[in-house]
Amino acid sequence: MQRILEERELTQEGPTLRPARRGGRGVTVNLAESPLTWLHSRGHLSDVQFDAGERLRADWERAALAPSVTMRWDAVRVKGAGEAGLNPTERQIAAKARFDGAVAAAGPGLADVLWRVVCAGEALPDAERSLAWPARSGKLVLKLALDRVAGFYRIG
Image 1 (cartoon, helix red, strand yellow):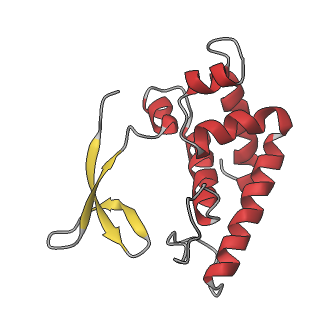
Image 2 (image 1 turned 60 degrees about the vertical axis):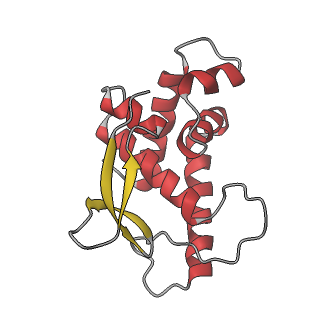
């Protein structure tokens, strides 16, 4: 896979979407790392579907749902919109509730491919293989799931 490297500004919450400022802290990000980015850059996902997937993954990261080796005592470092006045624990609980709501809105038949590709970063062919689906069927199912998630997040 081709790497698309870009320098981003590094803040206390993590990498931002804006380029690194001169003299500021920066980090190199591979934009082609996400399967969603790969699909979107090739025209397989609409902007609304891509934004819905990114919102879902942001909630997954805010809720700290990724597997970890040991207990983590650090605060969740992802800043969120509309969460002013909440402490870190309340933000994490709110993100978990949004994530659960979005996955429930996608439905039980679509949630598995949605989680594998959007949250776990699994490539679409690998997700199709592990779910025992026919080749090239995952893209259609993923698009349907992202449309439902977009409806949940009121994107579009």
